[in-house]
Image (cartoon, rainbow over the protein chains, first blue to last red):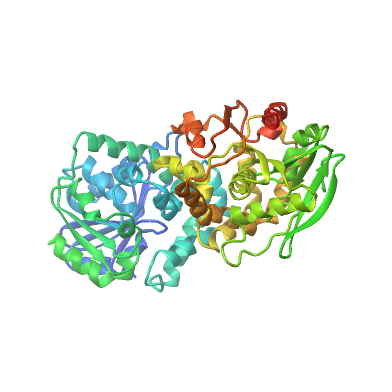
Length: 292
Length: 292
C-alpha cells in the first residue's frame, strides 16, 4: 500500500498535517472524505504517481493530522481554515500551484480552496457532493433523512461525541456498509484505521466540529460567494454515484456545479459513494484524462 | 424505584391482540386521559393528574412501547403507527367504562391524541396537545440547517439496526440529553423522577425508535390522507406551545388552524416539559378546555 511513498508530518502556522508523497511530475493534492483518511486513495494514488507528484493528506482534525482546539463559532474547523492548512502544506513542500482531487468532505475543502486561493489551484476534481450552501438551501425532509449524519454530527456538543465514543465502530461500519455498492472495497487494515480515528475522542470531537462549522460558517461562505458571483476559476471534474443520494436528490447535479464554475465536466459512475475505492480503474482513468 | 402517582390505582388493561398497557387511574367525575411524551412515562402527569382528580376520572397510561406497558416487536411497520397507538387508547378508555372522554397529550402523546381525534371523533370530546406540531408540519418546518435541532428524528428514522445499536450503546446520555436540553426549570424533574425516566427508556430503546420511525413514514401518510380528504379535528382543541415558531420562523398557530376549526393556541413561557415545569398553567388550560 502506497509503495514508494514517503510519510510526512509537516507543520503549518496552526497545526500539523499528516500525509504521504510519492511519484514525480506536476503536483496533485488528494483530499479524503468521511469516515476516512488519506488511505482511501491507496488504489488510485500509486497510478497517478506514475505521471504526477502525488500528495495525499489527512485534513485538519482527521486521521493523524493535528486537532487544534475549536472555538464557539467552530471557525477552526470551517473549510476556509482547513483549506488554508493544505495551501500552506503544499507551499512548504515547494508547490505554489497544484491540482486538487477530492472526495466527499475533501471536496468541500477542495472547492473552498479553489474559491479562496484561485492562484494555487490548476484543476479541481470533486466527487459525490454539491456545495454545502446549495445542499442546505435545498434541504427538506428527504434530504435530512438521507443525510441524517449531517444533523447528527452537527448536533449540540457533547451528544454526537458521546455516541461515537460509546460505539465508534458502529458508525464507521454503517457508513462503509450502507453507502457503497462494492461492499468489499475496504481492506481490513484500512477499515481498522478508519475505526481507530473514530475511537480517538479528540478526532471524534474535531469531526463533529467540522460538521457544526459546515452548517454555519461554510454555509455562510457559500452564500456570500453566490451573492458576489464568485466562481471557481479552474476546470472542474465532477464524478458522482449513479444511484447514490446525490443522484436521487438532484435532477441534474452537474448543472448545480455549473453555477459555481464555467468549465465543468463529469458523469455518474455506476458504483456507490466511495468512488475511488469502489471503482479505482474508472476513477484513475477519469483523473488521468482530466489532469492531462 | 417504582414511582407512582400518589392516590392513584394501577391497572393492567389489555387493549389489542396480546398488548397490555399499564395505567394509573384516579379521581372521579367526567373522564380525561393524559398521554405522556418522550423520553418519559405517565409520571410526567403527577402534578396535573393529582389536581384534575378532584373532579374528574383521570387515566394516565404508559403508551405502548414505553414505561411499564407492553413493547411488541414492530413486525410489519404498523405496530407503532399513531393509528395503532390511538386505537389502544380508545380501547383502554372503553374497557374502563368510558365510551367518550377528553384527551390531552404531551409530545409523542400529543401525536397519539391528534390521531385519536381524527380517527375516533365520536370518542374524543375535547383535545389538548402540548408542545408538538402535527407530524407533516413538523417535518416541513425543519429545513436546511435547522435540521440539527431534530437530529434524533432523522437518526431514529433510519432502517432497523443502526439507531437501536447507537442509542443502546449510550442510552442514558442520549435520553438524558433531551431531559436536560428541553427543560427551562431543572428542578421540575427531580433526580428520582429523572432516574425513573432513564431506566424506563433504557429498557424501551427498540420500541421508542419504532414509534419515531413510524412518524417518519406511515404517520405522515395517514396525516396527509386526512388533509387531502379535508378531515379536521371536530372537537374543541387547545394547543400549548413553547415559542419555537419565533426561533424557527414559522407560524405555529397558523399551521394548527388548518387541523382544528375550534382552536385555542397559547404560547407558554416555560420549557418543553410544561406539565412538570408549569403544572398550574397546564391545569388551568385543561379546565378551560373542558368547559368549552
